[in-house]
Amino acid sequence: MIKLVDVHKSYGKQKVLDGLNLAIEAGKTTVIIGRSGGGKSVLLKHIIGLIKPDSGHVLIEESDITRLSEKDLNEVRKKFGMLFQEAALFDSMTVGENVAFPLREQTKLKDQEIRQIVADRLRAVGLSGVEEKMPSELSGGMRKRVGLARAIALHPRIVLFDEPTTGLDPVMTEAINQLIMDTQKNFNLTCVVISHDIQSIFRIGHKIAMLYEGRIIEYGTPEEIRASDNPVMRQFLSGSVDGPIKVT
Image 1: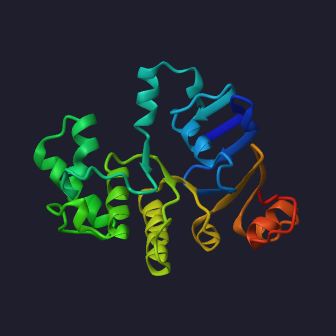
Image 2: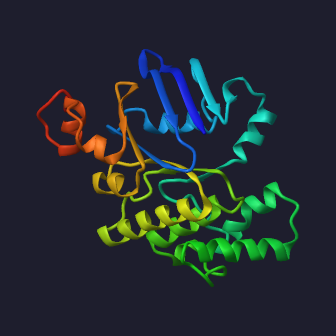
């Protein structure tokens, strides 16, 4: 579904991605882990075409988006949904208007059809009947659910999650993890998740990729990652200050 081939990206003298290679399977959830400031969000923005690499290729279903015009790139982006870290809801809009926003912007559906899709997507994330509420009336977990409902409004094939459980308590974290798994399965999505939450990555990931110093240094199933003898991988999972990852 998604393939990054020898991707390089620098900002000034700082190399962020340094010959990165990654293949993301269709219909699965791939979790990308790594240090804070290590390039995970930059990688995510390459996948959706918000950033172009200095060199290398980003393929979405065999189409190299690094070579597309803005018009063609926008067509590819219709395959994507995105759940941002803080849900990124429009505070001046109701919940229903937030979920309807991409439908009104990108389709010619009638109001009744849009209302039905909004109700269906909110039901899918366990939030039936909240269309008239404002985002300020919702808890952090509910806001993320609304953000997910909006992300899947256009029935995308790929959904990107930027640290979906950040700032949530353990109970709500588990609820969001379960929601990601259910949504991925029910809509047959290809999901890419950035996360620092070690328990979550093993809970939701079919595959896990470790980004370190601009490259994917380890990739595999949760079982393979747990069994890894890579010292960087082992230090990261254990949270130890001792090892090749230097604390600065």
